[in-house]
Length: 137
Image (cartoon, rainbow, N blue to C red; front, side):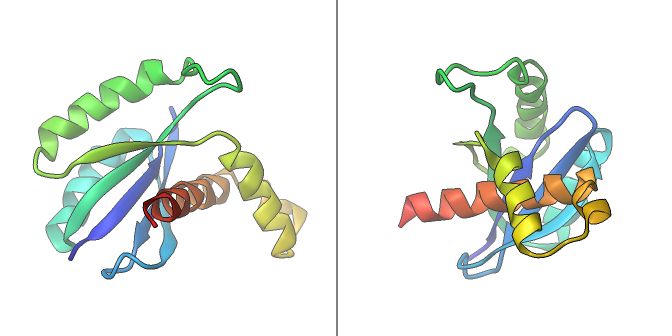
């Protein structure tokens, strides 16, 4: 059994989260500059078995796709070409940034740490992954 990888894809940087090999626990992994993400993913899947990639689907409150899809869609098409054997699924990512900030606050992180955008992206990816895993149960 391989891992499930989750991406909170953004224009500048992407939060990455991953499951354990039994696909029970979601953990934040890293935040990667989005332009370096394809290389990072190729290196990661060369070392680890990945069964699935889950990507946050940006929706507005009215359930329509947000304008962020204009840069997520080309990335997903490229990802399908460089990793053709790994399926890709989308998960609604509404409110993940809000939940990430709340998680940081509840964890007692200092204000300076809560302003770290890289950490917010990594936690958001973890929330996306956890949401996906809960929807499968």
